[in-house]
Structure formats: structure tokens, C-alpha cells
Length: 237
Image 1 (cartoon, helix red, strand yellow):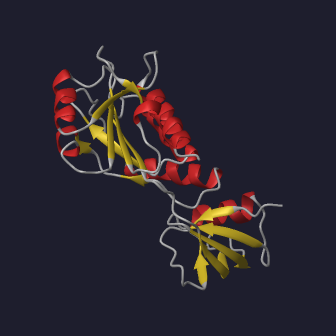
Image 2: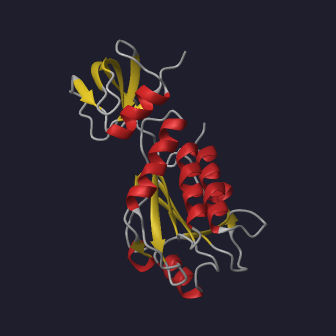
């Protein structure tokens, strides 16, 4: 039977003991009915996998003794998506969940001319990433950057390969044809209504390559998930 995995933010690989926070303790002890002497796994989101034994099954402060720490290989290459969040919060939360499960390493909220100005609830979004990481049995938490302006991001040499997916009717290669495996990659996904022509021109001027994600018009969050799948599949072998 597989051991349950719990998130232990900031847990040091050299630690010998750990006390879970109250929500995690409650889930471990009350929901999963774990007791003193039983083993669990901990993940700090930085690649460490801790095997531990429960020493105090307190439902508010469950304490464990760490028996072993294993550092798992970091995902390579680094695949990141910069995406313009939409006004529909639930759709973007869905995207974050699926992107994490698929295995993307970095997500950048992109502020474009047509981006809906919504409050960025960092704590809520990070909790979605954590839950998706644990559910998919991964040990690296995707990086969630602070929102960044389009004009700023395109000027940064953030990856070996840089692409912009847009809907203007110009000749573009499909991402599967344009992207080379084994290289750090950044892909830009636009808001509802797409990037403006001026933004596309600026990105191309900074060395971004225009790409297509297919023949159909996709919603922003759908385009993000399609891109995650394509980027991972290109690097699967």
C-alpha cells in the first residue's frame, strides 16, 4: 500500500523531526486515521522525499521522526509558461492544477494590454499547486512568479527557446515542429482577445518565435494546458 504524502514547506534535508501544521495534522490524523508508529512521506516541494514515522498523533500538531531523505533528480529541461490570467478565476485555477499535474516547472502570470485586472491571490494559488503536486505524486513544486508586465518579460533572456502563441493570420510553425527537445523553453499565452499586434511585434523583435497550437481557437486556459502537454511530450524521449 502506498504511503500518503504530505507537504512540508521549507523542511530542511538535514532535519530529524517535523511538526505538521494544523490543517495537515487534522487531515493526517482525523481524515486518514494515521496513528503513532505508522509511516508517512513528506515533500518540501524542492525535490526531497522524506520517509517518516509518526511519533505524536495529535490532530493539531502531528509530529514525525524523519527516517530517510532522498533527493530526486530535478526535471530537465526547464519548461515555463507565461500566461495572461482571465477574469474567470476558476478557469485559471483549473489551469494551474492541470499544468502542475502534467509537470510544468514554472508559471508566470502575464500582464498584457488586454489582461483583466484582478487581484492576485498568491496564497490561494499556491495551495492549488501544492494539492496538485501531492495528488500527482511529484516532489518538485512549480515556481509561481509574481505577475510581470509583458513589456518587461519579453526583454529578459529567460530561456534558450522562446515562443509566442498568437491568433493573427500569419504563417506560423506548429509548436511541435518549432520546439527542440532538451532546451529550456518559455512560451507566452495571451489573454481573451489575444495579444495586441503591437505586443506581438515587440515579442518578435526581441527574438520570440511565433507558433501555433492547432487549427482551432482555444480559450486561454485551454491553450495553456495544450501547451503543457505538447512541451512535455516533445521532451518525453
